[in-house]
Length: 227
Image (cartoon, rainbow, N blue to C red; front, side):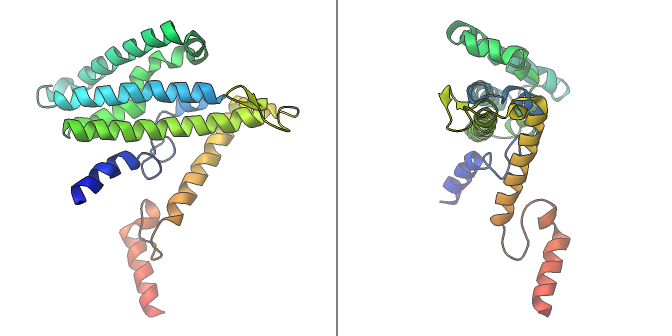
Protein backbone atom coordinates (compact mmCIF):
# COMPACT_ATOMS: atom_id res chain seq x y z
CA UNK A 1 0.00 0.00 0.00
CA UNK A 2 2.82 2.38 0.89
CA UNK A 3 4.54 1.71 -2.43
CA UNK A 4 1.28 2.41 -4.27
CA UNK A 5 0.88 5.69 -2.38
CA UNK A 6 4.45 6.68 -3.31
CA UNK A 7 3.70 6.06 -6.99
CA UNK A 8 0.54 8.14 -6.74
CA UNK A 9 2.40 10.98 -5.01
CA UNK A 10 4.82 11.15 -7.94
CA UNK A 11 1.85 12.15 -10.09
CA UNK A 12 -0.03 14.37 -7.64
CA UNK A 13 3.00 16.34 -6.42
CA UNK A 14 3.09 18.29 -9.67
CA UNK A 15 -0.36 19.79 -9.13
CA UNK A 16 0.21 21.92 -6.01
CA UNK A 17 3.01 20.74 -3.69
CA UNK A 18 5.74 20.80 -6.36
CA UNK A 19 3.93 22.59 -9.17
CA UNK A 20 6.72 23.44 -11.64
CA UNK A 21 5.37 26.91 -12.40
CA UNK A 22 3.77 28.11 -9.18
CA UNK A 23 5.99 26.43 -6.57
CA UNK A 24 9.32 25.66 -8.26
CA UNK A 25 9.04 28.79 -10.50
CA UNK A 26 10.36 27.02 -13.61
CA UNK A 27 9.39 27.68 -17.22
CA UNK A 28 8.36 31.25 -16.41
CA UNK A 29 9.18 32.67 -19.85
CA UNK A 30 6.80 30.46 -21.89
CA UNK A 31 4.24 30.68 -19.09
CA UNK A 32 4.00 34.45 -19.41
CA UNK A 33 4.32 34.46 -23.20
CA UNK A 34 1.76 31.87 -24.32
CA UNK A 35 -1.01 32.12 -21.71
CA UNK A 36 -2.76 35.00 -23.42
CA UNK A 37 -5.26 32.37 -24.58
CA UNK A 38 -6.45 29.02 -23.24
CA UNK A 39 -5.72 27.21 -26.52
CA UNK A 40 -2.10 28.38 -26.59
CA UNK A 41 -1.54 27.51 -22.92
CA UNK A 42 -3.04 24.05 -23.34
CA UNK A 43 -1.06 23.40 -26.53
CA UNK A 44 2.24 24.40 -24.95
CA UNK A 45 1.46 22.29 -21.87
CA UNK A 46 0.70 19.15 -23.89
CA UNK A 47 3.80 19.59 -26.06
CA UNK A 48 6.01 20.05 -22.99
CA UNK A 49 4.37 17.08 -21.24
CA UNK A 50 5.11 14.78 -24.18
CA UNK A 51 8.76 15.84 -24.24
CA UNK A 52 9.02 15.63 -20.45
CA UNK A 53 7.68 12.07 -20.22
CA UNK A 54 9.72 10.75 -23.16
CA UNK A 55 12.97 12.43 -22.13
CA UNK A 56 12.56 11.31 -18.50
CA UNK A 57 12.12 7.70 -19.61
CA UNK A 58 15.14 7.70 -21.95
CA UNK A 59 17.41 9.57 -19.53
CA UNK A 60 16.45 7.24 -16.69
CA UNK A 61 17.11 4.18 -18.87
CA UNK A 62 20.55 5.53 -19.82
CA UNK A 63 21.44 7.03 -16.43
CA UNK A 64 24.14 4.42 -15.72
CA UNK A 65 25.63 4.72 -19.19
CA UNK A 66 25.87 8.51 -19.66
CA UNK A 67 29.22 9.78 -18.27
CA UNK A 68 28.77 12.32 -15.48
CA UNK A 69 31.01 14.88 -17.20
CA UNK A 70 28.77 15.11 -20.28
CA UNK A 71 25.38 14.49 -18.70
CA UNK A 72 23.96 17.97 -19.39
CA UNK A 73 24.89 17.98 -23.11
CA UNK A 74 23.54 14.41 -23.33
CA UNK A 75 20.28 15.44 -21.64
CA UNK A 76 19.85 18.39 -24.00
CA UNK A 77 20.52 16.18 -27.04
CA UNK A 78 17.86 13.68 -25.94
CA UNK A 79 15.36 16.44 -25.18
CA UNK A 80 16.10 18.14 -28.52
CA UNK A 81 15.26 14.93 -30.36
CA UNK A 82 11.80 14.74 -28.84
CA UNK A 83 11.23 18.48 -29.34
CA UNK A 84 11.98 18.00 -33.04
CA UNK A 85 9.33 15.27 -33.20
CA UNK A 86 6.79 17.57 -31.49
CA UNK A 87 7.63 20.45 -33.85
CA UNK A 88 7.09 18.26 -36.92
CA UNK A 89 3.75 16.95 -35.60
CA UNK A 90 2.49 20.42 -34.67
CA UNK A 91 3.55 21.89 -38.02
CA UNK A 92 1.80 19.07 -39.86
CA UNK A 93 -1.46 18.83 -37.92
CA UNK A 94 -1.83 22.10 -35.95
CA UNK A 95 -0.32 24.91 -38.04
CA UNK A 96 -2.34 27.54 -36.17
CA UNK A 97 -0.83 26.43 -32.87
CA UNK A 98 2.63 26.36 -34.43
CA UNK A 99 2.19 29.98 -35.54
CA UNK A 100 0.80 31.04 -32.15
CA UNK A 101 3.59 29.44 -30.10
CA UNK A 102 6.29 30.60 -32.48
CA UNK A 103 9.82 30.39 -31.10
CA UNK A 104 8.62 29.08 -27.75
CA UNK A 105 7.93 25.64 -29.22
CA UNK A 106 11.57 24.90 -30.18
CA UNK A 107 12.70 26.57 -26.96
CA UNK A 108 11.18 23.63 -25.06
CA UNK A 109 14.68 22.19 -25.53
CA UNK A 110 15.98 24.51 -22.81
CA UNK A 111 12.79 24.67 -20.76
CA UNK A 112 13.90 24.60 -17.12
CA UNK A 113 11.01 22.29 -16.16
CA UNK A 114 12.22 19.53 -18.51
CA UNK A 115 15.96 19.95 -17.97
CA UNK A 116 15.42 20.39 -14.23
CA UNK A 117 13.47 17.13 -13.88
CA UNK A 118 16.05 15.30 -16.00
CA UNK A 119 18.85 16.42 -13.69
CA UNK A 120 17.01 16.26 -10.36
CA UNK A 121 14.90 13.13 -10.84
CA UNK A 122 15.24 11.06 -14.02
CA UNK A 123 19.02 10.76 -13.77
CA UNK A 124 18.70 9.29 -10.26
CA UNK A 125 15.55 7.13 -10.37
CA UNK A 126 14.12 4.05 -12.16
CA UNK A 127 12.29 4.31 -15.48
CA UNK A 128 8.75 3.81 -14.11
CA UNK A 129 9.19 6.42 -11.37
CA UNK A 130 10.71 8.84 -13.88
CA UNK A 131 7.78 8.32 -16.26
CA UNK A 132 5.29 8.99 -13.45
CA UNK A 133 7.24 12.09 -12.42
CA UNK A 134 7.05 13.29 -16.01
CA UNK A 135 3.29 12.70 -16.08
CA UNK A 136 2.76 14.55 -12.79
CA UNK A 137 4.97 17.52 -13.60
CA UNK A 138 3.64 17.69 -17.15
CA UNK A 139 0.01 17.67 -16.05
CA UNK A 140 0.75 20.29 -13.39
CA UNK A 141 2.44 22.45 -16.02
CA UNK A 142 -0.42 21.97 -18.50
CA UNK A 143 -3.12 22.63 -15.90
CA UNK A 144 -1.43 25.83 -14.75
CA UNK A 145 -0.91 27.21 -18.26
CA UNK A 146 -4.46 26.29 -19.29
CA UNK A 147 -6.07 27.89 -16.24
CA UNK A 148 -3.98 31.02 -16.63
CA UNK A 149 -4.93 31.11 -20.32
CA UNK A 150 -8.63 30.72 -19.50
CA UNK A 151 -8.44 33.52 -16.93
CA UNK A 152 -6.55 35.94 -19.17
CA UNK A 153 -8.55 35.18 -22.32
CA UNK A 154 -11.92 35.37 -20.54
CA UNK A 155 -11.21 38.76 -18.99
CA UNK A 156 -9.00 40.19 -21.72
CA UNK A 157 -10.74 38.98 -24.88
CA UNK A 158 -14.17 37.95 -23.65
CA UNK A 159 -13.86 34.37 -24.87
CA UNK A 160 -12.54 30.95 -23.84
CA UNK A 161 -11.47 28.44 -26.52
CA UNK A 162 -13.38 30.59 -29.00
CA UNK A 163 -16.64 30.66 -27.01
CA UNK A 164 -17.95 34.04 -25.87
CA UNK A 165 -18.02 34.79 -22.15
CA UNK A 166 -21.09 36.74 -20.97
CA UNK A 167 -20.44 40.39 -20.06
CA UNK A 168 -16.70 40.24 -20.82
CA UNK A 169 -17.35 39.55 -24.52
CA UNK A 170 -18.89 43.02 -24.72
CA UNK A 171 -16.58 44.60 -22.15
CA UNK A 172 -13.11 43.01 -22.50
CA UNK A 173 -10.31 44.22 -20.23
CA UNK A 174 -7.37 44.41 -22.62
CA UNK A 175 -4.90 44.64 -19.73
CA UNK A 176 -5.12 40.89 -19.10
CA UNK A 177 -3.90 39.92 -22.58
CA UNK A 178 -0.93 42.30 -22.29
CA UNK A 179 2.51 41.47 -20.88
CA UNK A 180 1.68 43.32 -17.66
CA UNK A 181 -1.51 41.29 -17.37
CA UNK A 182 0.54 38.12 -17.68
CA UNK A 183 2.74 39.13 -14.73
CA UNK A 184 -0.32 40.12 -12.69
CA UNK A 185 -2.05 36.79 -13.40
CA UNK A 186 1.14 34.86 -12.62
CA UNK A 187 1.43 36.57 -9.23
CA UNK A 188 -2.25 35.98 -8.51
CA UNK A 189 -1.98 32.26 -9.26
CA UNK A 190 1.20 31.93 -7.19
CA UNK A 191 -0.57 33.53 -4.24
CA UNK A 192 -3.50 31.16 -4.68
CA UNK A 193 -1.16 28.14 -4.74
CA UNK A 194 0.51 29.27 -1.50
CA UNK A 195 -2.92 29.81 0.07
CA UNK A 196 -4.02 26.29 -0.89
CA UNK A 197 -0.81 24.78 0.48
CA UNK A 198 -1.11 26.65 3.78
CA UNK A 199 -4.72 25.48 4.10
CA UNK A 200 -3.51 21.86 3.85
CA UNK A 201 -0.80 22.25 6.49
CA UNK A 202 -1.13 20.77 10.00
CA UNK A 203 -2.39 23.24 12.58
CA UNK A 204 0.94 23.12 14.47
CA UNK A 205 2.55 25.04 11.59
CA UNK A 206 4.77 22.15 10.48
CA UNK A 207 4.50 22.00 6.71
CA UNK A 208 6.43 22.76 3.56
CA UNK A 209 8.61 25.76 2.83
CA UNK A 210 9.81 28.37 5.32
CA UNK A 211 6.60 28.06 7.32
CA UNK A 212 7.43 24.45 7.97
CA UNK A 213 11.10 24.79 8.91
CA UNK A 214 12.35 23.07 12.06
CA UNK A 215 12.52 26.31 14.04
CA UNK A 216 8.91 27.20 13.19
CA UNK A 217 7.77 23.70 14.18
CA UNK A 218 9.71 23.87 17.43
CA UNK A 219 8.33 27.31 18.29
CA UNK A 220 4.78 26.24 17.44
CA UNK A 221 5.02 23.17 19.64
CA UNK A 222 6.61 25.14 22.49
CA UNK A 223 3.92 27.79 22.36
CA UNK A 224 1.28 25.07 22.26
CA UNK A 225 2.78 23.42 25.35
CA UNK A 226 3.01 26.69 27.25
CA UNK A 227 -0.61 27.45 26.47
